[in-house]
Image (cartoon, rainbow, N blue to C red; front, side, top):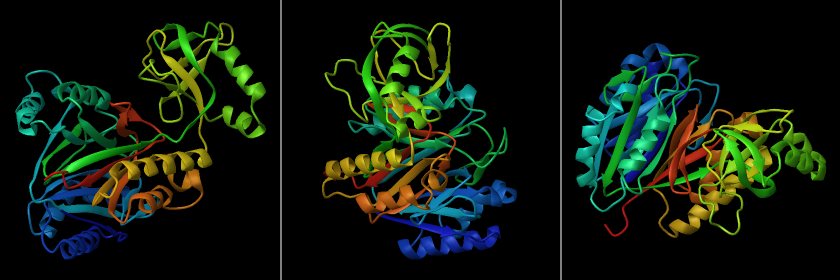
Length: 396
């Protein structure tokens, strides 16, 4: 297994393609088996022929998947405003790769997508199925696809993101082999001698105490521990320091746990979701999450310092779990709300990855939504950095 990540800042698409493909071939010693391609909107006029031209430049027929991006991550560099074309390429002897495109109406039974998944199940065997998912944010219900894959494949490992770099329907691009699509989603399946591990950094810390959901209607919370949410929030605000009071006015979120049978809950045990509104008369709040009775929730805060600490924490935990088997390559799916705008410095998340898990070839992009697991189930996130780590399968 050999991975490399290459980057070009050329505004001329032909020059950029030549630079990244020549560097990738030289680093790998030949054509790759798998390529991830991410292109900034500066190359928009060339999107429709871009994947075919990249494959031609690689002197082979690799499986290619990628998308347009508001910011490209390649060669351990986060490029957020300048022109960028990035490749993450790999030679993967013994790996079994398959990739396909689907539209929103392909999610039902009897479609080519469902038939492909049915054929894939016995091929995966006892190992967990592994998927990278890229989707258009305007035309495709990504969460429905994630639920389908989670339900159809036990212990599935899924990571990915929503394409960016456009302002409306039809402006995003998805790249698959020689083709470009402006709607739908891509699914890449990885099996055989390649193992994918996911890491998700939600970038929040809890404030106040964990609370039981004791009355709700849909996604509206009426009571927490038999008190109104606004009553509890006012109490938390009064007890907070000046910094947290300021954050509560613009960076307040709610965390919902997937397992209510724990005795203790801490940072990382919650799925972070938005607060979407409040009713001053009833004290209720509306949240961007599915709820069920007696679920445990806790309010959370996010800022640059907290996000940085959380990223370090999850990457260090991943390093301990991987032990000596560091990743050979990795994808980073980072929210457009992170990067230099959040941290005030470039290459923050890419740099943290290299400190904890590098050196490894790292590529990816800034997303309109990030895909990764929390508590064993795959979700679409916001403000998150999700990593897919690749290494040879253990025991192979």
